[in-house]
Length: 249
Image 1 (cartoon, helix red, strand yellow):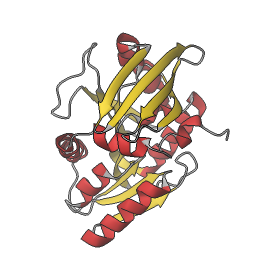
Image 2 (cartoon, rainbow, N blue to C red):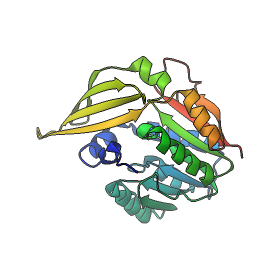
Image 3 (cartoon, one colour):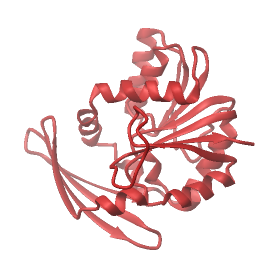
Image 4 (spheres, rainbow, N blue to C red):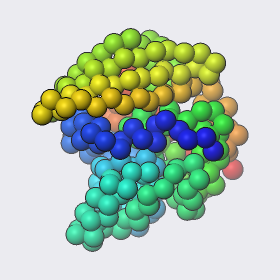
């Protein structure tokens, strides 16, 4: 497959920026949400795709859930490996490209958190969903957290934004393009020592209808749309979505 620009997104300083952006309380709330929605118990198995530095992986594993953690960042995976070893957690970390990765099978849940689901064009997304469908047990759940579905991205689109993440200052330039619908971004990150790094990314924009069709083709059906891990129902205007889909075949 063609190289994906998003593959290099977490190679440099953004790894540290991302960590600064996520409050610990959110990870805990999301882990509880995942356990509840997927009916997880100790010894059940989950695949955490785009697991990043393992915030959900470690949180679930500490509750006895067996987790296959997949990410294409070797640094993140090494970190998860060493924490899992230290705490003797049931985690199988795997540094690989997600589209060609084997996700295992018989999982009670596959989770894709933190907006990584929009990294792929339609063909790759369809392929990924089919391999998720195969990896899930009957009535297993796919849980996606995103802020780049059409119902959110169009409403909240800005051409320029800036924010601070701990000691980092970040300036974002966005362009909305069509056919396929996507948002191309350039982030300029200024580190505390004044050094500057620029990274580019693409988020492909799918509507909930698009997703429904792609999920159906993979044997999955949407069963819940929430705007918070506390299960507030998603409505237009909300800045985040948690999509829950169930394997029906």
